[in-house]
Length: 41
Image (cartoon, rainbow, N blue to C red; front, side):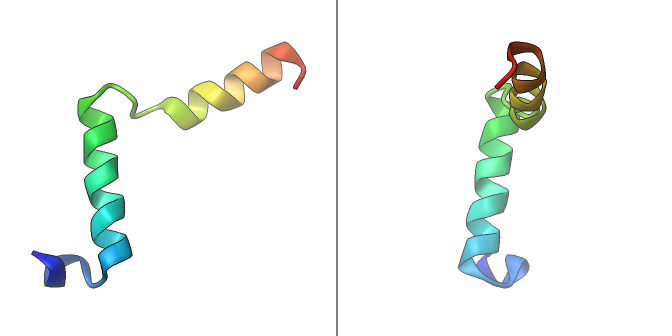
């Protein structure tokens, strides 16, 4: 499985991306950008 991603960081990134999608956090970065635009931060 490790060779499929080429490096440990890429494997971990894919793992965390999948966990985020499964947990409903797939658009968290967009939500943070939107919140900053509306609260003036």
